[in-house]
Length: 122
Image (cartoon, rainbow, N blue to C red; front, side):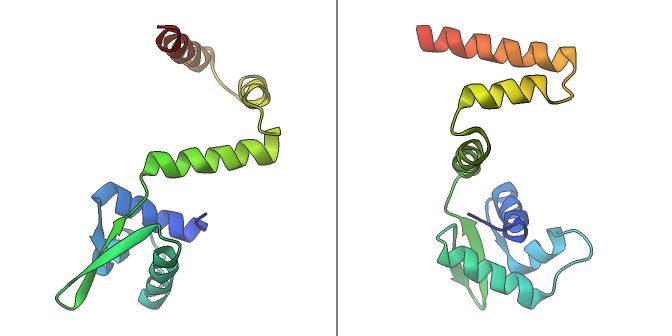
């Protein structure tokens, strides 16, 4: 699992499908962290096998090794396990009853669920 700071960097890497240190620093919001801080985060992310790099001259180009969809699917599973006892039904109940969703948002969710049910039945 990545820290919040690591996720910020990872989102940059996913968006650009890889980046050099200078590109990462430029893409981070103000106040920008020190270059040494970003370097440490990249090292940790490499150790976690979330990214890899290739040396190009004196620079490193960092590339994600994990797809964004896979990462967030795993994070969602952890969230669901921690807060909803691994129950998708409990999550859906909370999500639809205890959040401030509009009627149009609920109808869109209903439409998505209906489409998924049709796919799984065929």
